[in-house]
Image 1 (cartoon, rainbow, N blue to C red):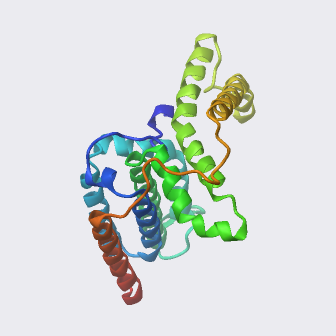
Image 2 (cartoon, rainbow, N blue to C red):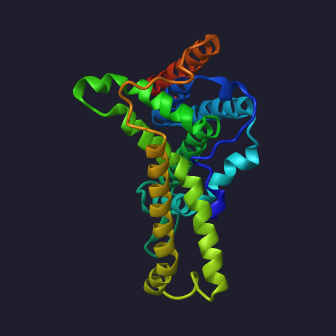
Length: 267
């Protein structure tokens, strides 16, 4: 399960998406997430499916690797679907005692499941096709207007990119610690909820120690390289829009226009 988290990982390959400007991918991802809440019918989600499939094909990232990240949210997805199926009022399809399944509940559960899955996959595509350095540069460029209100844009974008970068590292560290503790006799599965919570202590303590040690090593390495924030710093590879970025913007805006039209017409 730990190794199945793909958010924050980068998959190196040569594709159109990998060559896009990170700002284009940031804005495209935000618009795609917005469209998921504009669509409210299954024909609309069909349009979102076609768009997402095209993006996955263009990314050249293996589908099995991309959808592997869904295992990490399986429990959240299951709870969401069950709650909507059994707690949404409407036309009853099946009932035994106080437990009932409604037509509206099934429809709402299906829509929420699609939204969650597409949200995770769409966000993963951005991180899988963008390096941490590109993430930092893209975030800093998009948030640059906030400099006028004294927001430390460079520092904020650096922290966000480091946090994303540390996700797969910490997940791998968690997997190693868990296997080491299991070899020493630790039990993370059996017992009631309180016992399981206590059983996590041998996992969480070394994980936090490792995380702080990595953070300290990173801080010392940045200081050793004379890093002093974003003021007066230049970029080795300045971001510059190219023709493919404008084509990508056009495609995303056309897709967003379709989602708005579906919303207005109630399709």
